[in-house]
Each structure stands twice: as structure tokens, then as C-alpha cells.
Length: 148
Image (tube, rainbow, N blue to C red; front, top):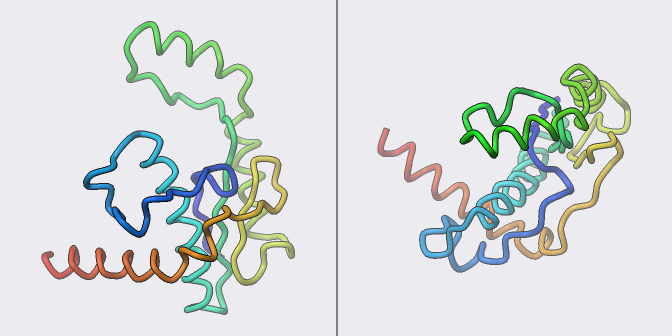
């Protein structure tokens, strides 16, 4: 199976997918975060359609107590460090993510895994955007790889 760890089931849809797929005019931190998760969900589904023998899962690990934030300015770094005691351990997060690769629940097709390890639901725009997002994804990849 294939496991992508980002924000499966917890992000909002990126509503500008059809008019500004690459966020050239609508970039914001929120749009980038939502777009990354939204596009990732769709990629997992479409890759599973093209490769039915492989399971594809987009997972959300939740808040994990890692060294993330060490590069932030002092005050923000302090806040993040204080909050990290409430995160799950990297070992617990890794065990849960491994569950997606070895459980019957995620053994075929595609799926989204929530932070508690359960199956999550896709966003409200997923079905309507699927084909357009996938076509745009392939076009961008073809353009970029053609320049390599």
C-alpha cells in the first residue's frame, strides 16, 4: 500500500480549484493548506483507480509531539513547545499510521484516515472536483517534467 501523511479528512475543500488551481492569484496560508489536503485526497483516489492492485491512504496524524517549530522565533517557539506536551508521541503516531498499511479496513482502493485511526470522509467538493483537479494535476506535472 501507499500512505500519504498530511491532513486526510480534516482539511476544508479548496473552492478555487477550477479558477486558480495553482493559487497564482489566490494564495494564502489557508488556501495552500486546504489545497494540499484536497488535492492529496483526490490524488489518492485517482491513483487507486489507475492502480487497483495497490491501496492508497491519505492520513491525518493529528498533533504529534515532534521537534516541529524549533525554527520559529522565540515567543512562538515557546508556545509550540508548551503545547507539544499534549501531542501524541511519534511512536504512537507511527503505529497508528502503520495500521493503515496493514489493516483490512484500508487494504484496497483508497481511503482517508482520521487522527484516531478511523476512516474519515472526503470533503463536500471532492466528487464534483475530482476529474478537473486530476486533469489539472497531470497538466502541471507534464509541464514541469517536460522542462526537466
